[in-house]
Length: 227
Image 1 (cartoon, rainbow, N blue to C red):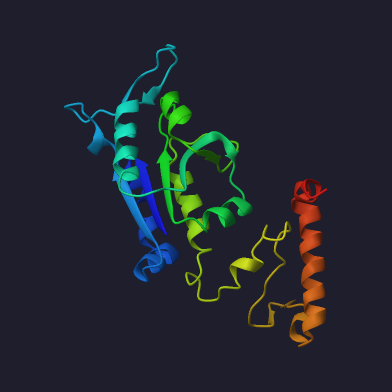
Image 2: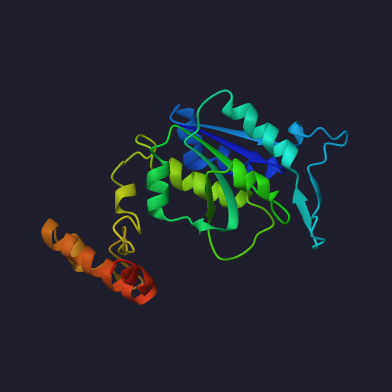
């Protein structure tokens, strides 16, 4: 997989894509992540990439020209399954979204900033708009980092245990059950005996019951969504 991220603030993405799981996936050659500085595509002598909105609203808007040129330079080189704009008014990014995008070969993430981007880019070039939550951040860089992390960890070979991702929260519409490790007792706090019983069937039953109970308590909306 190849992921290209277009941003006016590339420094915000240096750490997320160069450490932990993403770094190991890149080192294995399982994924390429390329960060493109939007200012490199600006035709302004000061490398300016924003301007005032015609509506007169407060805040700056990212210009159409550098974004168009950045996307054009990428799409002329290869075919992309999606050109994704990270925006608070986009569709919610869910685990199922990550599952789908993890099967793609090439993806572009366009990071909004300030008050957003010229609407004509959204109308004519963007194929998908995604949000990580009902709140507004300074820019879309951190949202892109979240989505990229979720997607890359699903690529076969990225995690040392490929079944690990399949048991994550939300994969089956439920929250994951609680997990424990050694020691079996600490300060009088004990690990549930069933987990040390060796009875695989009973352990699976316990895990499902715990997942269902946690979901009912913490995220009942997930159960309503399945009706």
